[in-house]
Length: 507
Image (cartoon, rainbow, N blue to C red):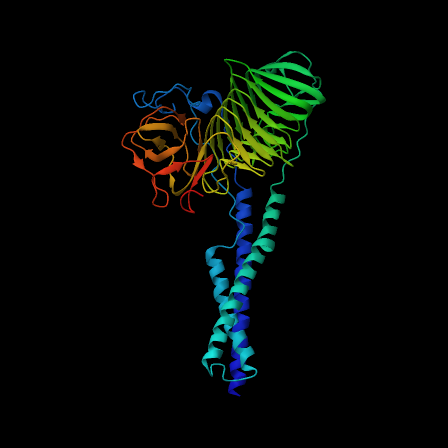
């Protein structure tokens, strides 16, 4: 009778533990759905950036601070002054069980395992703990079963239950279908957008100079034709979709006319989810300035659908609610040959579903400071052959391939570096490169022609309140604090790619 009561109690405990696991999984599912709803209901800031609005009026309150001249001298042009942080600042919660939920599943699995193994062993012998061998078998069996149950349930829930919630969220935030007006076809070599009342469509190959202010889209629909758009102090603000849309063409070259400042801003939740969006190859030339404000929901700054993006020259200021520069779809190559490029993204700074090649230029690239994104992210790797590169992220880091022609040093820091902190990579008393970021970061990639073999130190300095965002060179640092990574504050460069981080040392 006593053995039957014991067996019943053990079976009840097993049922309770199973119920505990089920309740925990259900709680995780409900929490994920709530997070998805909250995320999908977030409102995108409506204010548009660009021109004086982007860089601030020339007042003491709004003007971006500058670095005192006695601290830095540079033979290179500084990065453009940046607007203060204008990101959404929100992210969907991770579609995984939390540590607490996994711990609860582990405890319930342990209770179930103890009861189950005891019942199984007591079938042949009511006295389970009759000798040491049986005790050892009992302990090992319980430990093994508990591990399998905890891991199996956790992996299954993450993969099948919570993943389905993510898919549900994606359906809820499906892009809006936008009806473009292609009735206004233009073929003039010079187009004053201020005189246009609806979308402007280009269907024939050639060069088109755009000027004026506009609140619709410039559409390129010229299959197998080469199109060049010359931007001449143009300002396009479209609150519903992309500012420039390449529906079809052999290639689209965007030439930024010298000594001009051009501002493109988009909005909404469009299927054309980049401020500059193209189904054709994009090429950027010219020495003017281009400000790109990717304000769409989960929208990019510059994006193609499986087509190459090449930047040869120009000054770029790109902000976005997702990736800054993106070659999506089945992937394509992002090539940077020159230019002065600043990217502040709420996703990846530069993202290619294929690969990327950096041959020159000056790049200051910031990925999300929330998590899950990197300064540079590719599916097939990227190489750095030249130029000056600083790429920052919050937790993820992808280092370049060691087939590049220029040295790179990469850090996965122990702790985040706060925004507005000056960071300098020093070789002896010489600052090889210095920069200031408008948001915090934990991963750093630095590449420069000045990064030769030898020992380096990384310093932070927040003693000055007047600083430009971007890259500075040929500087010196005062009142600086040495940064250590895993108790190491001297970093040796002796190969093309030199990485220091959570694995310890150079890996």
